[in-house]
Image 1: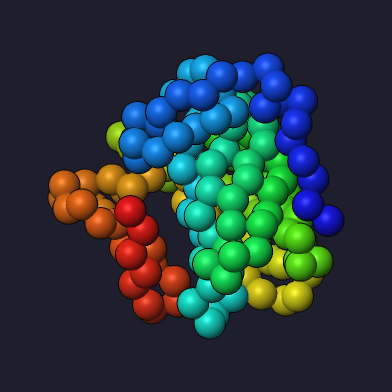
Image 2: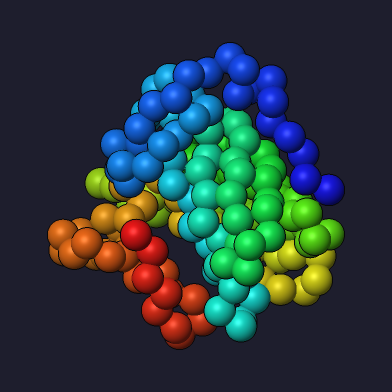
Length: 153
């Protein structure tokens, strides 16, 4: 089931995410709203969304087929290790374990599994698109989903 994040939305005003120039309606602090992208399974399905909070929080977004998904995330320790749990409105759910891999861009990378048996690979952070572009300055980042490059802007 899709959980509504209404209490958070009521407390926070709209702002613009400095990284992607898209609206981030659930936080006053642009640094607290970060892009989350993920590959799901091996058929080119991908997730695009936003994560909110510091040290722990929520995320919300859509799969490329339009399915809404949300969940929670938390860092487990000072080394940046953590987990995220996702639930989608079509009944999919899963867990991802992640670690911060790139200190320059602050990008977290994780792997997990959905209840359908599909693997998940995620990337998130303040500058995740720069990380996926290889910090080349290209306008479009490519999401590497099982050998396929999916453009994410």
